[in-house]
Image (cartoon, rainbow, N blue to C red; front, side, top):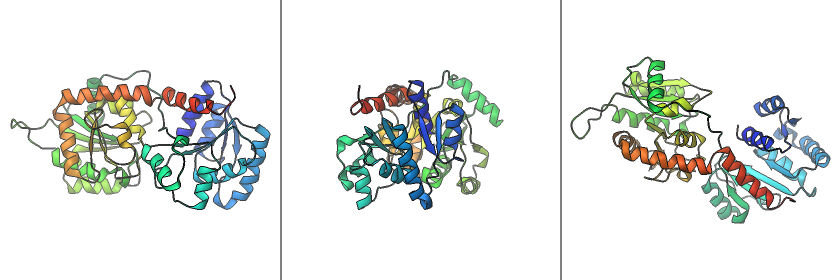
Length: 358
């Protein structure tokens, strides 16, 4: 979705978009529906030589001002095909976060064949500088921007709507997660943390309000999570909602959104969206999450893979609403200024302007 969203934003600003992608890919289909020029390139590792000649022929024909590659195979094909064609601005966008191996081939890709590198998190930028000796002023951390919704429900309205959807008491409150259900998202630690706090007494001896955990998304880790909540005897308080096209009402319904990733997490869009929805956030000090969550300013951070500290941070969030609301307001101001598509697109155009003719 990042490539499509950025392309749509650029098209709305009057730029001509040409997409090269496999014909059966979602990107190809969505680009075709937008009426953009689309080229069917397989970007299959077994057809790289064929794709090289097709991409080079395409680039010679269209003479783009900007070439931006996004995946592994398309980067190898397109950056090599563009060599010697004097394209003014060649970008390597790296959306994934695992370490880039310090090989001779990667050094050529990142140091010789690109003008600039866009990464999804600061720690990826630092790794490229440290391990591949790429010049720091050629790398920009530009997490995926998001399109803000035109309207959001009030928190209490969204909470009651979610309680109705789940057929639970109208007084029920919610801790939530929105995203892919995978092991690296730390969902087993989130589930364990929720089990620890679900019946925790407060300092005055009162019981916690009736909190439920809501997981919005789909993925291969669902079965393991279902087994875990059965084992923890919290199945009646954990809800698996599957994928939702519009996640915004859920962010507004939650008292706390949690992203407990263990590693290799970019500056996650779910955290950005939760922040824009003024939903208090808790995250782990892993990957690009600290680019968004500044501890005790825009949210709370804990070490990864630690359900005890995660439970404590969630408790601090839901039992100290004044402090949580202040952090949520700080977070809203931060993402509004830095992470909407208008903000991110403007930064990209500023970078392009450094090398493109006026």
